[in-house]
Amino acid sequence: MLRWALATDSRIEQFDLMNLEDDQDFFPDYTAAVVRTDVLEANEDLADLTEPMANALDSDTMIELNYQVNVEERSVQEVAKEFLIEQGIIE
Image 1 (spheres, rainbow, N blue to C red):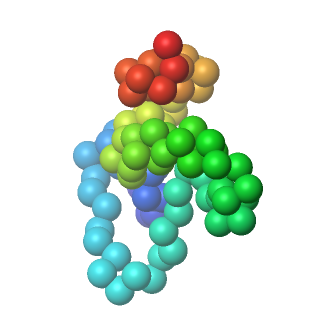
Image 2 (cartoon, one colour):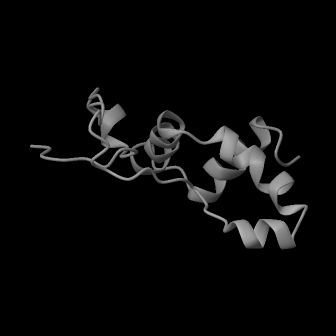
């Protein structure tokens, strides 16, 4: 019996579950990467490099990517490379 799942857990798709809305903002938002403002200001090109990734990754996408790795048993490297190519982030 599944008692809990993280927001991007592959079991959400595997068992056709749904995430409940956190309308009380109990859980903090998290992203794939966090960059301090002073680091961004000191490295002007960094925002341009990280923005495509930030725009491409959301909870639904992470659930799907995690599903491919955990349930379909594809390698992390294969899933990541395919995703990055599909998003036009790499060639």
